[in-house]
Image: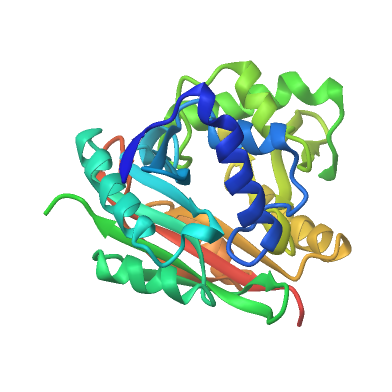
Length: 163
Length: 163
């Protein structure tokens, strides 16, 4: 697999993955009916670095974004978001993108990385972030309305990049 | 004092307060040099409710915003931001706006309110939020670069509106 910065010609593939992930409505606090235009505006926002993971025969199977979590006095902390196409899950793409992302964040000079909204039912993501050195630094009660499980907790997760 | 939804004619007064607060650079993670256009786009974003507090003789002395903290499955939690003009501090405007805001959030059907980024050096704000029933539910290490104090902690604060 190859992870690289995205180009304009990746937009269709990214939208397909984005739409699939967000329509499921169980991992992101985004409108499941978000338009292609709004989705791509979010994923390619000013100041956001966008990457894709390419598999040899099947093409683009995942995408991630890396950006400052805040502006001004908060811009030294990175934030990131990851999406993997359903057909490509369980193959280590998430982990590969996360490791690439941590490396890119260090290269860009960020001092730490924070995830603002890790839904507590997303066990695979939480396990991966903990494996990669992230800790739960905040717990938001009933912050996500899960399509099947109702109101569930959301975690804020954080790791330093200074070690 | 009177607290009311803002109108287009309040934009100059809001920008004056916004600019003063953000230029100080010690309470918001926003670019201290943000343009008037970007500031007003942020304060009047789609889906954001914007209010002002008016004093009898001096006019608009504070402003606040109320909005969903997330989209989709996270839209039942409110977020808010408050700004008081330097000349009007210590007169209870922050508390009056916060109480108004909690009432508005309940009226709009939000189940809870969350502040994502309360800088630990902002003692007056933390005291006020705790007085109003907010708890610290997350602590972000070194998340804010304070102009005088260097890297300081940031809190995530939360209160239910269901009681």
